[in-house]
Image (cartoon, rainbow, N blue to C red; front, side, top):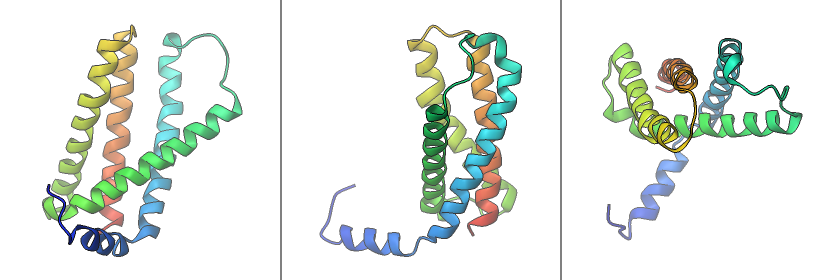
Length: 146
């Protein structure tokens, strides 16, 4: 996309029409979904994790902050492309979830598999939990943001 003189005007107009309360609520919902599902996942993937004990509080705070920021980003992406998605509720949910899951697979799962020596079962567990989180988030986004 070429930058035109009108580009800043369109960007400012787009930012002003965003319903930030709904975006922050979606970020919070994503934080809750991700935290709960990851805690459940730990129970099943415990044998793949080191025996160092629970992480410190600073890790949990950083994790919650980054997870909330990820939820905000996903909400903004949905807000930006929502007019391009199908109008039916379930089609919209599945299209957006598929887009996010495909992006996650290409930009996270495949590079992690190639770059790091991790057990395949752990990577599969991460992908499945990410799939569930992204599908639930997509369902919530479509429900909250019209």
